[in-house]
Image (cartoon, rainbow, N blue to C red):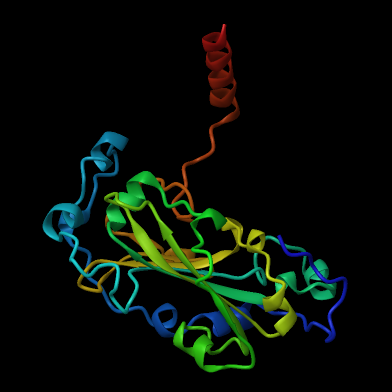
Length: 261
């Protein structure tokens, strides 16, 4: 996609993870609404994958409203940034391209949150709706509206998306990318958006009650009251399936080899 400039005009300042957390956490991320765990949502610790796939109260007791796609408040929200995760501090401080200096918010209206948990949430540039995006430079209002008002971002790019059309797990939404430097926005490459840059995720039921929360800064506060303990696939950052042990991996390899003969 777009190429990265070899240098930028301004010197990039080093970032402290505590500062980034303070900047990123606000609105629904900073003070999520209080919630009570409904015992009906719980799954036994020894539940099997089949138990998890039998459905959830949200599927049966809270059917999808007709206006799910046009509701002004999204029910699935992802926040991403490259400033704090899985990277060398020195490399980040002295990097001379704008790839590192952005925040993104993926705000979706999802038809069926439990279904997206069972099937996994997947998206890519193929879900972008051509001709529906725009760029706002030197504008602080939009970052504030999407929950990035504390990040000192003045420039924002938007993309419209849709996925799983005409299915029970259809979703629609908007991707917002905000940055401090205009060159980051005008040359933004969607390949910079990767799962390892997710710092927050929130999902809500149709009564706007939180049913899933992921916070990279405070893992002890993560919860999923729809499918407790079930490993999630795709862009759900938590919980993930445990990697197979070396012995199990070797056994699986042998089985696959035998099956191929």
